[in-house]
Amino acid sequence: METVSRENAEHYVWGGQCDGWHLVKTPDLSIIEENVPSGCSEVRHVHVRSGQFFYVLSGTATVEVDGHVHALHSNQGLYIPAGKPHQLCNRHGSDLMFIVVSAPPSHGDRVEA
Image (cartoon, rainbow, N blue to C red; front, side, top):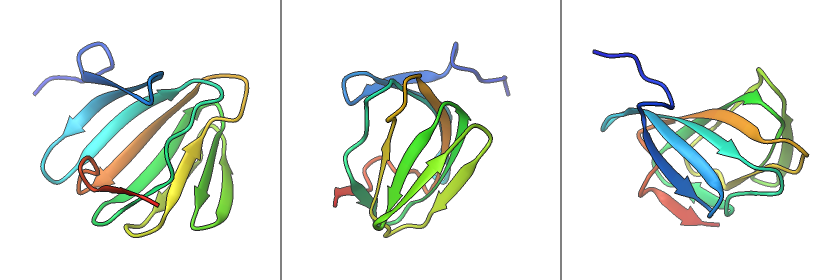
């Protein structure tokens, strides 16, 4: 076993400008650190099987879940059960850094809502 960080984790880009680093990637669990620049957002979607927990490290996340808007600040988190339509946005002036934990992993389990 070795320690993991952004420096040695598998990296990917989504939405053209957002970064993700796979900190844990197993068949049962996904833990990703993500960076979302100001003004960027993901597409509103739903996961059929995966529940997700978003935990903000820095910045402010605006998360809409099933019609309800939540502002998550540093050191705050939100669990989104499978089947709940949601969208994460960064509407603030600085980068948003957060951890998203998905069980089971959410890649390939996303339908636009």
